[in-house]
Length: 130
Image: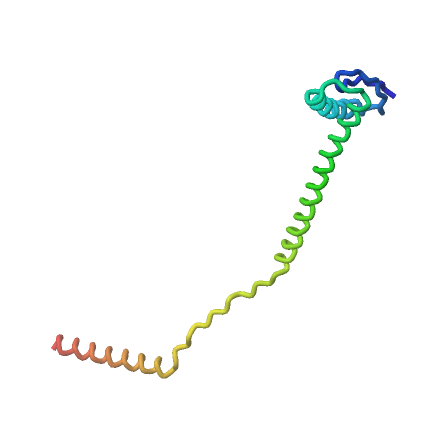
C-alpha cells in the first residue's frame, strides 16, 4: 500500500492509499487544500483540526449543492424522455382532402359544346375553302 505525501493548508500529511489510486488522492487533497487556503485567507491561522473540519464542511456543502443540481437535471431528463416517448407514440392521420367531383351533366354539357364548336369550325373552314 503506497504512502503519499499531501499538503493541506500548508501542512504536510502522509496518507496510505490503494495501488493506482495515488492520482485520485492527490486530486482530492488539492480540493481540500483549495478550501483550506480560502479559510486561511479569510480567517488566518487556525488549529489543524478546525481547519480540516471547516474545509471538509465547505466541500460537503459544495457536494450537496452539486447532488441537488444532479437530481434536478435527472428529473428534467425524465420529463423530457417521457414527453419524447409520448410523441413517438402519437399517430398522425393523413389529412383527408376531398376533391369535388364534376357532375356527369356538366361533363355531358361540355362535351356537347365542344362538339358544336368543332362543327362550327368545320363549317367555317368549308366556307373559307369554297
